[in-house]
Length: 469
Image (cartoon, rainbow, N blue to C red; front, side, top):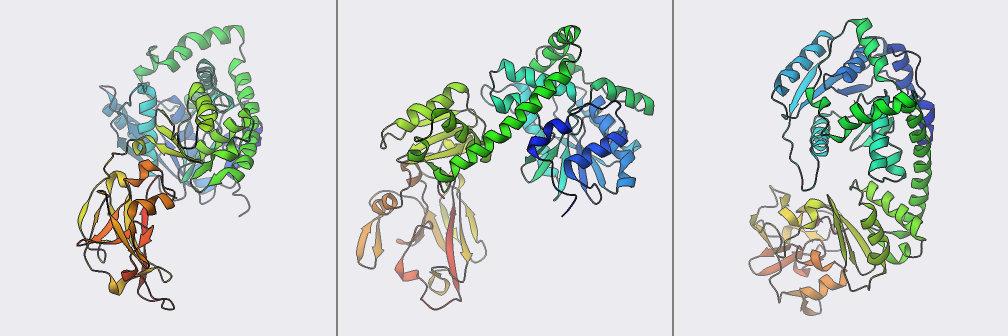
């Protein structure tokens, strides 16, 4: 559809030119540059009630009728301040004055081991926002020029590479939608002047002055010193971030080209990665991890992955873990897992004593994923032969399967299928009394197999598991 194409990744510098004056007319042009036409769009603002989001909400509300888009706001109450509930009500009241629906989302912030409170709150906030977005609804945030400057400085202090130093892009894919940051070129002072012209008030979160938080320390101590010496520091840092964003886009295209030959289902082929120079190998791994929405490892762990892990013996089965993720190697395959997927127990997940598959096509197996019986005219299961009630359990040792040419060991089947050793204990066995009906979706007892030529009354087992393609 013409007019709905997203901004080019390498057009970041064009979209980050500072405006002479912030108002709704400038915002309309910026949004059109980012997403094309606004008519019939659904926009949802992450609305804190502070100066930045109030200015963006006010400008959006004044455009809404003329441009023909739907607008609403979501306010996240993190419950980290005694007055948090009052601020939430005030934000909702301010939105109501602008005739914008505003929903309050109350979350609990749980910090992971070694995770900062800022990072934990951000994770909880985005999870809550994404859970409430409607189909085809775009999420907007009010990050502005100073926020971008602080992000660049934080990335420098953390020793980040091109990805971190390119800071925030004005439009990025996020889960099932896109995240828009239209205010990145705008100075906070411009937003404040806009609200004062419109006589619109806003709330001030006292935690924003707490210099124990890294971003606040930069904002109140470091940045004023830098701007006293270099008044245009925020604008020039944003320009540098835009240049790095272009470099990042080129590196991602290069990484995708290298990944094309290395892909093996959900895994990567170690032998292909090892043929790349180390810098290109690391770049390809970063692109792959980003595709899988996994957090990036630190510098030392990335070098360990790209070096010793990939050069280890095929039977060594090395693993590298970091906050939120883990990589494991099995023979020539490199597999990635989320943190919740890495601590798989030696004995698998939930055993199901009674599975009435006619009324319950899918069953949850906890850490072992889920198992389903899906109707499929090309499936290998003959439903008429299948007992109406089955059970699900896991390996106990010594299981043998009935083949067309005699019985054979279950462990031989799992080895032939190339499953990683840590996944084999997770393979669900579909049982009827003492008969193994199926081994996940890897094997089916001939007694229950569909006849060739018939396309009715057929199905197939499906096993959803993070370590299996």
